[in-house]
Image (cartoon, rainbow, N blue to C red):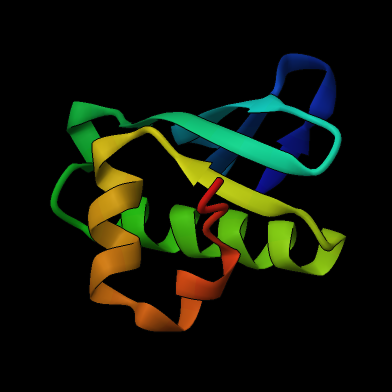
Length: 90
């Protein structure tokens, strides 16, 4: 996994080949997660879940909150309530 703050993107790769990414918009106290993509070639292998878990853990470590706009992230948090405390309810 790789975080590119300049691009506002988290990237996942396998063997140096890009698998997918999560785009976001950084705000002072929170991260707005806007889009999750896993390339068709890697679909159905659990990479999206691994990537979103990594992103949420990284955001937790930073002390920020999350605004899940991406439907995949919304569903992931619903299925993994241990991340519910990260959601900015404002």
